[in-house]
Length: 400
Ligand code: NAP
Ligand code: MG
Image 1 (cartoon, helix red, strand yellow):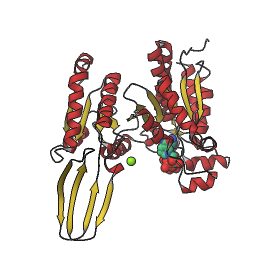
Image 2 (cartoon, rainbow, N blue to C red; image 1 turned 90 degrees about the vertical axis):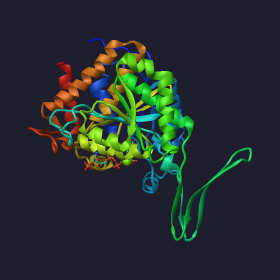
Image 3 (cartoon, rainbow, N blue to C red; image 1 turned 90 degrees about the horizontal axis):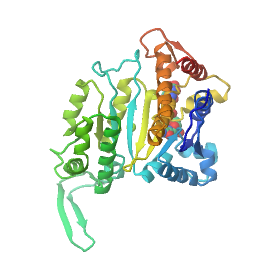
Image 4 (tube, helix red, strand yellow; image 1 turned 45 degrees about the vertical axis):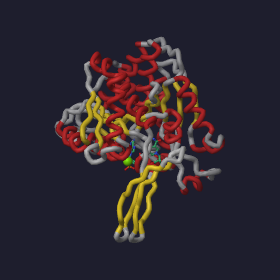
């Protein structure tokens, strides 16, 4: 059989620990036998990041911007313990944070559904995608403890010296204070990324905040979304048969829980942090959550939502066979290949991505899965090692 041709390479960002092991196995067993895989390879493994003083992360993000589609393996975000374990020159920043900042992107997280792994919420039939704003609010806050009686004020001094001032509170005793901010440019990028993604996957877009209480701050988010929608996206949404609306966050929560799923829910930074964990857990497993970073100008970086699965890796190093779930990492590859196929007009490449995803789902629904899923699967499940699971997927693919 002739291998599928690619015209533009994918930007490949290799990573760490157990996911690095799975990465190589997925490529060898499920991709290179079928696709004449073209990638521009970057080794984001911690050792190589350290050797290059993290330049490799910057280079990989530049390549993602240049080529338009990247696929990333999970990577270690170093902490003090990792600095010691790897003898690092310094505590390098989170690669995801660096890439996100350089691509000015929004992260969309979507669960992979299989029959037999039932969402905790009975009505959910289709995946719910959370789009989380990744800049500002409490993640860039300034806060302080107030020792006692005194007046707290919000003061803005313009470049020209004009001062805006309002009283936050007249403290009669001790308390706490916090200052947060956001930027029109960042909110606009977030809005455009959400509108583009909704058009891309043809699903309704919801955006929620608390504008009834936060009449300037949250209201500003709502206004920017609406202005950009009306000016740039309204016609395209009508044509695609999808809708956009804003609703209060409490209303959104109530409606999401009663819904069948199948929408994109855009959230402010903190709301997105909390709601994505809730949605992932309620759908079944972190190991079944995909993640894609989309820049406002339509560049994509696909990855799994979970980390490098360190606990399994230490067992693997001792020579044990592990049962680490490779599904989200496989779907990172299929997401990237499908997008490359769409952009380059390679229908067969996109179709292959679909066949591989189907082979994965069919394998699980056929009762073969990794241990994490076997625990929550309703039906007869055979828990197998990562390697045996990937082989079983290969067998399905051969027969599809
Ligand atoms: P993790 O790697 O997601 O793993 C946490 C636990 O969740 C695992 O120990 C395992 O539970 C379960 N799990 C996660 N993915 C699984 C899979 N594919 N198959 C089976 N079980 C899975 O998170 P972590 O242990 O907090 O972080 C480990 C490293 O990953 C850290 O260095 C962190 O910096 C990094 N990280 C990277 C990313 C990223 O690159 N996007 C994201 C998060 C974390 P059991 O041990 O109970 O089986
Ligand atoms: Mg969180």
